[in-house]
Length: 130
Image 1 (tube, rainbow, N blue to C red):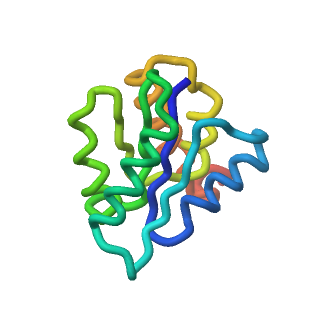
Image 2: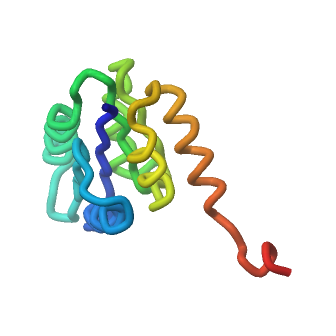
């Protein structure tokens, strides 16, 4: 089962995980890693490293981050040295739900599908309805 880490500024990742669980039920091998202004980059590095270790059962880990180029992204990028880690930026709820529901597929394939699901979920409702 692919592990999931959601690393975000503030509590956004915690709430994404909680909300996903409201929709799909309790999720295993998923951890949110919040990053707060009083924390250092080293503290964030250690939190992400520990979260990856906690959720990794050998099938790989997807690390979702909120903002490309932000601290969570930059630090998570260092974990890409491991071929069994993927980092996907711009996390949203449909991406988390997609991954939770397809965690038994191959890491590279599911990472691509999750990215597509995230983009597809961004819609101007006026344009879609009219």
